[in-house]
Image 1 (cartoon, rainbow, N blue to C red):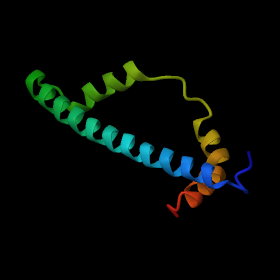
Image 2 (image 1 turned 90 degrees about the vertical axis):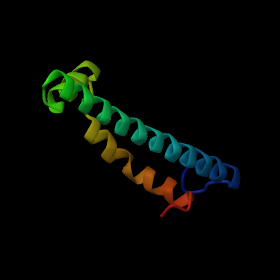
Image 3 (image 1 turned 30 degrees about the horizontal axis):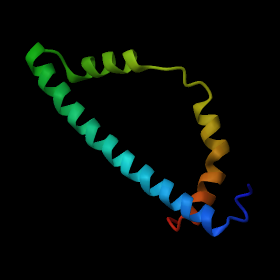
Amino acid sequence: MSLDSLTPDETTKIKTTIASGEQVLQEIDDLKESMAEYVHGLSEELGVKPKVINKAIRLAHKQNKENAIQEAQEEMSEVEILLHAAGKI
């Protein structure tokens, strides 16, 4: 498939996928806000800075993310084409 010649069906799929992705990202933002409130409450209860709890959480979750920036740069042109096809830019 070439992004230069999208069919109407492909364009519809792109729009649907991007709309779903936007919804998921909003849900993630909401969850992050809830987590921040939870961490704040726990930090007050334990008498430690929220930064310490957040660092423990990040370290527990950390995964190997080598080359993440390079991969993002390589994909940027395709992302731009998809957003254009979806009518978002």
